Image (cartoon, rainbow, N blue to C red; front, top):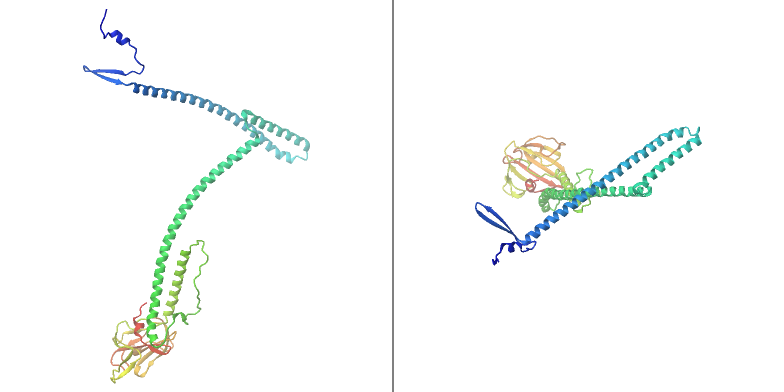
Length: 401
């Protein structure tokens, strides 16, 4: 009797669970390595294998089923196409014979009409045979579904075009907004420049009005009588397609500034602004002074601008020569009427280049600096009169446009 508690036969005959821990022994170079596989790992592995097997079976089944369905549909499609070809052939034949029937309807009226009625019935029967097979729907349902399908396609196309057009409109709106912003910025700069130019011209009129006010006078450039065919009124642009009040206001302001600036520039052409000789220095100012000959208090109606003999004298406003001659104490004298009440006098000239009645433009030369008449040396005696009253010429000389 074997009393060995570790009897190998009893040990190996003992029944083990299905997913009991398994051991895999690897031998290499006289060494043994044991790899244990737990019950949980075995269950997971078996589940994965079963899932793969089920998926493979299902895919195989679906593949073959889809193949059969496609094959049946292909057969139906071939039959439908054949039937359609037959039907269209009959229709074409019938269509070709209609012309001949109409041409000979008087000769064989009753027989031909009856013949084509029979052909029409045959075509209708074929259509009924085709629509009765494979559970085809009725002709009314076919027309309805066709119309619905076409409507859906048209709707999808319209939706696609609408979305594309909407994107283009959005892009266009963004571009318009960017252009509008840039345009407003440009308009602001143009408005600033036009306002600056206009204010500069207005500043000149303000400067020359200072000596006039001391004489109880005032020059109003808006009452310019020299401008022929005068037109005016506020700028009112035509109705714009882009209704942007801010932009329209800026455009109106710019046009108003430009229009005013052009008007003032036209007026200023008849106002003697600037120096009549290029190089000079003031030796006697306007107003009270000591007479250079009698050494007593006296009134000076202009300014004396000392300069070299022969230096050219240019007028600073367009006008007409009303006097060009020797005039006693003034020596050689030129008087120019500029209109708007302004006159200028140029005395003690060395030479006179113009004649009475001549029309002059800004910058024209009327003569040379000299010392003729009651003079102590070469200089230009320069007077400005407004409505017959002499005013201080220096503000006019110093004014710059």
